Length: 602
Ligand code: GDP
Ligand code: MG
View 1: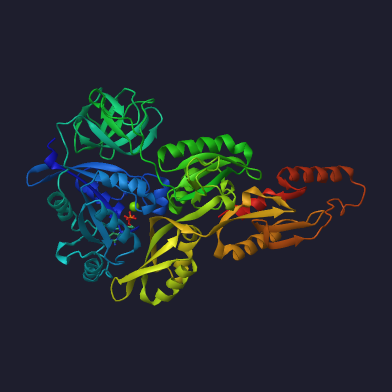
View 2: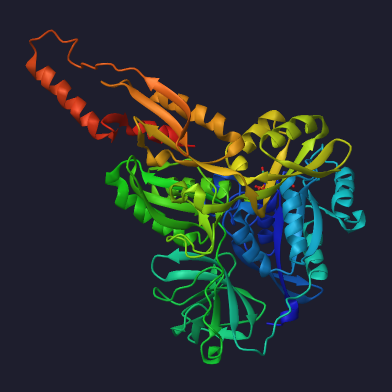
């Protein structure tokens, strides 16, 4: 294979702007699939992707195309459609030299359009601006071209127009991919080195990887090594994905291929595969860490399901290198896990896959963000070896007198909205402790607003609120903006004076009164009356912020029976004692497990 005839590219777009439909057309034109409806959206493999219409996993397809009597190898590297999956997006983008930047000619620029454009810019990729859905009667290509010019300085005469659905303009688009995107710059004569873009688990063959060969070449049977490990492996599997596997004997720099070293062969996203013989001088270095933005507890709905759920989470985590899983336990919910995600959509997709692909029933606790603290003085507190620590579980927060500074994660939120909602959007964002950045006009009807927002305010129902405030017309996306100093405290809940561990939260001081009141009233509504009085308190540093009381009440389950029927009476008492097993007992107060589930659930 001649490297100058390889093109590695990706399609990026806002959700629903036609990525999958275009991918199908490309597969048809290059002869991979037959035209027709049978093979619709071949690249969207997962059930959750089909249902939600979003792409979660990066999938690749190597396509042959003849242009000007020359044979080209086009590697379409499908990237997930949302920045939540930035981990996956960035890996796949690293193997690309250009992108088809797709914008719906009817809807125009949306929040994710802005996000994917800046991703492509940041990675110095050639951008092929392409308007899709020009077959729609309401499509307004001229207006969207003007939007592209005003927001991204894209010249209208460089913009292509297509209909992915009808296939209009697709051959011209492929020609633009060949003529505008450069061949990969790789070192063919250096030792073999490939970076891993994606991994998945194969029952029989072990971990399979999608790899971008950055230098050299490799053949089946050669000795290889992971950058993260000094052990020698044999390259067992090598194939092109079209997207079905097509085994090959040899692959060279610039290609995107499937590799595998067998059941014990290893492999993970971000790692590198090296030629064993020439990797002597290369230091073992661990794969770069993933940055988790959202954490949630996952518990079996019933402890008898623990093994099953454990199995399901393990399998899913193998296919999703971006989650972090640690064991967790809660007095009310039993043994479970604390799982870190890249963002909210990632969390949603993970739990949906857990249900669909593994039929595992799980309880999901309310998501929380990681906080950072700076510990006072030079002598760090025992459990924190450094001076700074990331807190993913509020219970781990040390006493406030030992903390010099608190930090919380912030994001830059991008909102594209019709101008009539500017006021409502501003109010929402300021309410959520947002700081406005300058806005820019998209056209005379739409505007792009940006805010620096605390992530904790975005993870709970921000998107839904925005949608309902703007009748569904605004779109939202966010990008990490790092940790900022913040005024935070730990809030505990006490029931008759005893700490309820699972209800401890970290709260911004401006939100304290509101959260305390909300939590105690909610608990008062949900906890059934008991034989003794129940006091519910929200407490910060020994100070009670809110208190509710539930009066005592004697619950006599047998009262409504008229003496006689002993068996029924016994049965009722037995039912009551079984009910108790589902109770969490705090200070002799029995609280149904459901109460915690409902309070903690999203
Ligand atoms: P994705 O989320 O970017 O992968 O978008 P899809 O490819 O799933 O397309 C979203 C919707 O737009 C689907 O209902 C498609 O049938 C439709 N669609 C995609 N391309 C076109 C097009 O060129 N014309 C029309 N009329 N509809 C299209
Ligand atoms: Mg899609």
